Length: 591
Image 1 (tube, rainbow, N blue to C red):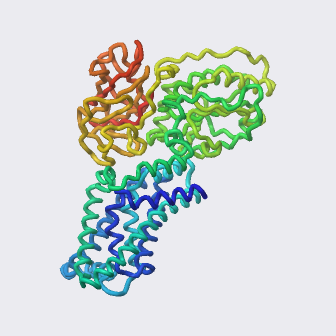
Image 2: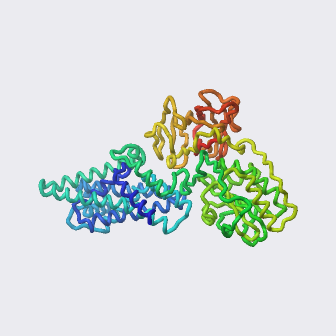
Image 3: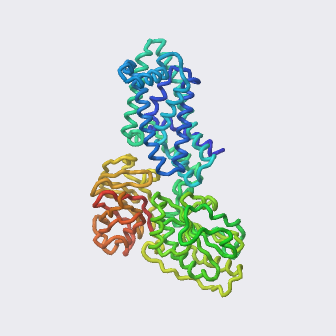
């Protein structure tokens, strides 16, 4: 109930957000009409359509986004015609016969006569909901991302409906007040006709603003009543912690770059935490046929939740691989559950290639729909769950570290299962390159997302333009952990794509290692890049994916190690310039 209240309050705040401005003319076009028969159906259609589209977007993937864009343009045509009939009723006579009839009906629905039509108002609300759906604040972003993790459910839809109902409530108040003003002006001035035409002009202006992307771009940067602080406070209450640390935001951990090192139980006690959930939610299995309780009967099982571009998963991987090899013949079964963070990690071919490159030979379940993730009620990458031979979870550990304790758990569970000659010795995992343990004493830079949905510390803070190509120019100097873009970029929700040669990213960081998740162009064509540190070639401080002169190539969608400082760690300014267009950047991590 508390979550529903917070979602509702977040929707109420929408009225003072610039995001709603282009939609207001469509709502205020109902002023002067009875609220129950005109304004209420419009708001109901708007709220229901918004909740429906947002629910689909949360669980449906990219095809829903594309479909919604088509619906958005159809809605723009619809409301533009509506606006024209308000502004120029005589224009209907010059249109073709079908449009004349449509225009007449729309004109009547708009208030050309005294017979408000709830059905027509509801249709106008549906169109307005399609226009409004792509534009929302951080609370809605949290709801959608959480829904993507938790899956389609009544709770998800109720939260989205609560958000839409909050926005509809504030709009209803504005509409009722606007209706009183409208009636007063008609009585005192007799200006009903020019008011109607003024509303038509305002609607056309709203259509133009949406068509030009102002509702998700420029208007999202300016407001006479900033709601950012209020919304962020509600987000933190809704998530129970900061967005980057929340499971709903799919964060990897609560410490910088996700290096969680927390063991919830002390090896030796090993209480029963519950039964091992079923593993039947995978869309595909690699290196093995599907595994179930019968196949795992009598085995000690380690379930490792991971995703192949996650730096924390990569750094724990040498230990998981070594355990799988060392204890395989003594009754241990290691199962990787690949739960993607970015869209490209849903591609099974990408995962297959990554597994080959990483030398993963144990079974891996492709959990693209997060069914296994939800069955375990998991929240982190990496997450390790240890089950005994009776199918009971006895221990779990989130994030990196505590490898000795985890291996002792494996040894204890194997002994309980009756395995003979279980060694007390511990592995000495060989970790190199990106898999080398981080220097946590020197990490002062957080994991940083480049897409606008979770972008932080971007400067200048009013210049990130979502979902369209824009020109950027970084400031001359950056403070620690600030970053910026230069050149032509298309910034999407989870990535930024270089739209022209010589586009670059700059970041002021403090850590031994700097990594960046990158991908080539949509056609898979490699993209050349050049890395500089403090304006010079990295030399001995180059990462494994960069030559000493700073040159490198983006060939696959994966994590790239671009910097490894060999001397003393200090604040440095990193820049990467893409010599060809098409490269996509997703997230920085540090070590």
